[in-house]
Image (cartoon, one colour):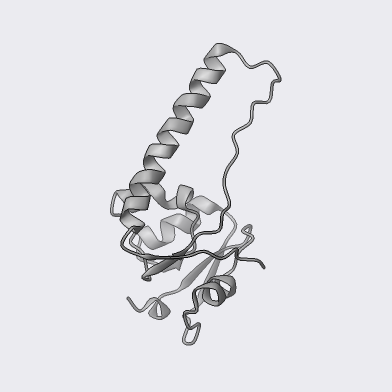
Length: 132
């Protein structure tokens, strides 16, 4: 795919930029289309679903639309950042119900991410830590 022909969606609150992506993957940044900036992750992910450009997305953020075929990878490679999410209880003594909900949520997230990883399995992983 020629992602350069599309607008580059940039999430302003993220720590990684398109320049970081191009540097880590070795892909050219020549001929990049216009940049569209969003501060809302939901809006940024909706843009490619509406055909309005390409977005850098954390796997957890894009797993569902990727699994549903609403978005597709724009290149043949992706970045393994080593970053992860942490779910914490606000209480030092969470209830059994809170623990059950947390376990259920973690299990559902794992399932969604593993499904998305199978979509990415045909792609090349670049194991670099992207730093701004």
